[in-house]
Image (cartoon, rainbow, N blue to C red; front, side, top):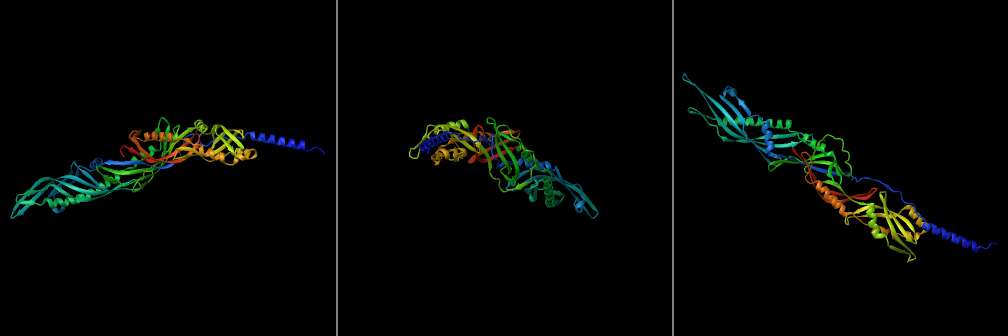
Length: 470
């Protein structure tokens, strides 16, 4: 019989050597891949305000321009049952418009010339004579303005009486001709005709759609909001909202809101959308303040690795009551899809590198990046299970997850200041001024590029686009 002790001893030594080789063996590094290589914010549903503001004097000018100077003329003294009356009515300068909510009151000054004839035939005596006079009157109208989904502006105008400025008087010898009552009836009739004229002129010649088309088309070109950082805002409009026109002070106002998808880009100017026509109008009672834009806090892999190295390198950890000890000797970081990989160099009871993966996440309270669901990479886990399963109890990964913090608050605040500057009195084109304010910040998402970790924070606020002539 062969002695078995040397055989057992040899097997034990080989087993121990095999274990040593496994403990020092290197797990495979996770593949380095990236889901994005440029800073690109997710699309956000936003409302861009386009204030509609029309001075009352401009509306007065438009109405004056549509009305002819000579509004009414009757040169036949034999018509109207032989009334022996000739009349001419002219509009005078000084039309005034006053708004009370959605009701617009118009005061139109008129100058009236009248010629009254007199005939007397009795006892073989025939007398015939005529007299002329002129006077002034202010006629009043009330109108309501409506805007349809097809962008057509319509008005409903009604007569609202008149006031004599100089009352007409005319005497033919001993006879006083009652011109005030006669002309009053004619003015009433003419007011009704004028209301129809005003409504027709508005519906045929007032059109807001070309002005809105200008804003709609302009918005589909990416806007530079920070030249030093090559930051662009891309707006893809989808719908137009508008409140009713109302008069306040010396102006007619309405809120026009363009609902759009907004995105922020850093780098080269993104391609613009194919221009599209303005859609039908959606009438609303109020346009919400709901503009959203992505702000970014970006840290390089090198900087993040330096911060992590200061936290971890040189730290020693013991396991199973001091039976095993490891020390972190180096830290490196890179991306693998949506995960950040921590390559940790170890010495002690485990020698070599281990790889951990976690999803980078932004913590708004501390304004830092941390790693969610941090755990060993699959190959590292398999190696440790074979060679150092005591290292798998979870203490090391919990410590790494709890301690890994990369500050990005300063970068996000700087991005906010930069974009806010781009939204303050920014004359982005001739006759077009961009103004806005950013307020509430909420976390959006984090992604990894080949050079950095980027935290995107959603800023909510209001943005106005003032367009001359609208």
